[in-house]
Every structure is written in C-alpha cells, then in structure tokens.
Length: 142
Image 1 (cartoon, one colour):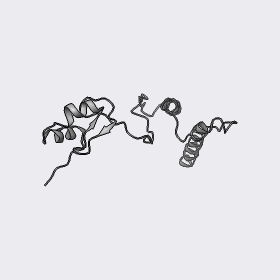
Image 2 (image 1 turned 180 degrees about the vertical axis):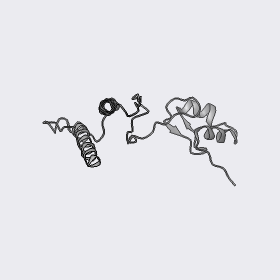
Image 3 (image 1 turned 30 degrees about the horizontal axis):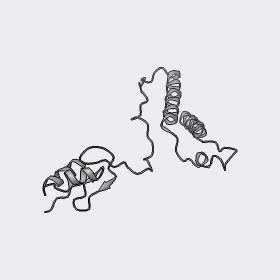
Image 4 (image 1 turned 90 degrees about the vertical axis):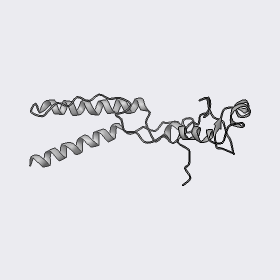
C-alpha cells in the first residue's frame, strides 16, 4: 500500500509542476502574438521554476528525517533547457569580431574588406588550414 500512495503523491507532484509550467495565453492575441506563441520559457523563469521544484523536494524530504539531505544549488548550468533555435553567431577567424563574410577560396570568415585584402588574400597555403583548425572546420586529406 505504501508504494501505491507514494506513486499517487508523485503523480500529484508532477501534475502540480506541469500546471506551474503552463504559460497563460494573453487576451490580446493580435498585439502580443509573439508572446502567446512562445514555446519555451526564458532562463530566468527556468531558474525560478527549478528552485521552486528543489525547495518542494527538500521540504518533502524534511518530513522524512531518515533520508540523506542533498544540497543542490541552481545555476545556469544545472537547468535542462532545449537547444536554441537561433543560428549560431559567426566570428572573424582573424580578429574575433563578427564575421560577416566568408572567403570562397579558403572558407575563412572575415569582418570587412580591409582584413580580406591585407590578411586573408595574401595568406600562405598552409596558414589558412591552421586558422580553420582553431575553429574546428578544417579537413584532413588521407
């Protein structure tokens, strides 16, 4: 019987957490359509929900003094969130600034035409592969 009640308590807890995770729809869907269609919560909301969940677990464990006490701290790295849907930012291989352009010859990213003419265009044949190796985009011929 104790296993059945703990399962029921666990299901009640999961239902409460799922109700807390629902994002309510706005009354004005035309003006706030982007907010209403948001699929994921922000990192601040995820951290708050995770700390609430951990506090609920710790309070439940406090009722049972025989169980060992875990110490958990909520950080940006301890929250499981879905991967970002935004494309990854591209940076210049030479300067580290935003890489708006890509050389068709050696696939190096560069920030502006000045960097291309002074550094990328007169680059020796093996040096470009070293820059690509730093980024992890090199290829090895076998």
